[in-house]
Structures are given as structure tokens and as C-alpha cells.
Length: 234
Image (cartoon, rainbow, N blue to C red; front, side):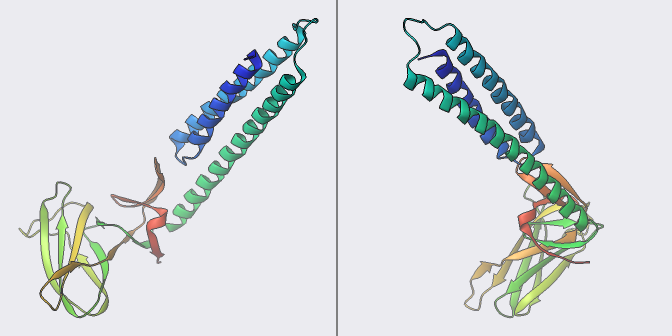
């Protein structure tokens, strides 16, 4: 294998690393993607230098095979395209992140309904919304981060959409601090069985944060992906 072919193989490996790193939208992965792109660009320069050195020092009595030389020029062009592609991809990711930040900033201070199994307790209140298939008793349980049940309340739900607000008080009568608490909503069926009901939580958007899995909308102590947002109020 020629020196230029070895260099091309190295640049292809660097391109794969850059592409993988660029697929993440977090700031950490953006830095990693930038490092991979710099490495690819450096290998690209090395590839060109090795190719020119090989041409200058080839044996006149046994020149470089035409097919091999053509193949190396194709590899040279491929590496250049990879660099351009990775540069464009990095710019696209940065624009997407900026758009998500702008979107999240416009929600700040507004009431937001999101899909989550945790309710944000903000200023001593946490609200959930669920749909009951029929008028039936519904049990709503709230748990802390350690899985301890803080409160367990029954309510008579009407058929359709129901809203329930927790005042941050536990079953013992103590007031728990603002935070994010796990919720379970269970309906009592007519045949005596129970079933979990789908619900969403309502809170006030307080900010936007970049995390490893993308941009997150914050509702107090609760962070959710933008894809979990169901409605934005005033």
C-alpha cells in the first residue's frame, strides 16, 4: 500500500469520527465534532504532502501506475468533500441549537403543558391533567426522589379531561419544598379492576438548558425535551 493510500485511510477514519460527533446537538459534542474536523483537515494536508512527495521521488524507470495514481486522486477529492460536508453539518447544528434557544426563550414565564411522569412543584403548587374514560374514582399518588409516597388522594373524576392541583402537602400534613415529584394516576374500573391513566403536567417555563440529549425546557426543577411540549398558554 502506498503512503498516500495510508493517509487516505486515516482521513476516512477521522471523517467517520467527525460525523458521529456532529450528530449530537449538545455543546460537548459540538466541541468533540470540531476536534474531529480539525484532525480531518490536518490529515487532508498530510495526504496532499505525501502525494506530492511520492510524485517527486518516484523511480523514473518505474513510474507510479496510472490506475493507482487515479485512485489516489479520487481519494484526495473524497477527503475534500468530507471536510466540506462536516463544516456544513457543524454550521447546521449550531443554527438548530440557536433556533431551539430562541424558541425556549419565548416560552419563559408562560404556562406550559408537557408529557412527563413528574410534576413540577412551583411556588407550592403542582398541576396535572388526565383523561378518564368514564366517571369513576381516581387515585393520585405523589412520590419523592427516593420512591417514598408523599401523598395519596382520591377524587371523583368526570368522563373526559380532569385537572387536579397539589398544594405541596404530604399525607402527614407537612409541606414539601418545590421540586420535581413522580406522579401515578390510577382509575377504578367498573369491574373492580384498576388501570393507569395517561396524564400530562402543567407548569411555568423558567428557562432553557443544553444537555447531552439536546435542548431542554425547564419548568422549575423539571427538565423536558421540546418534543414533550403539548401546549403553551399565556
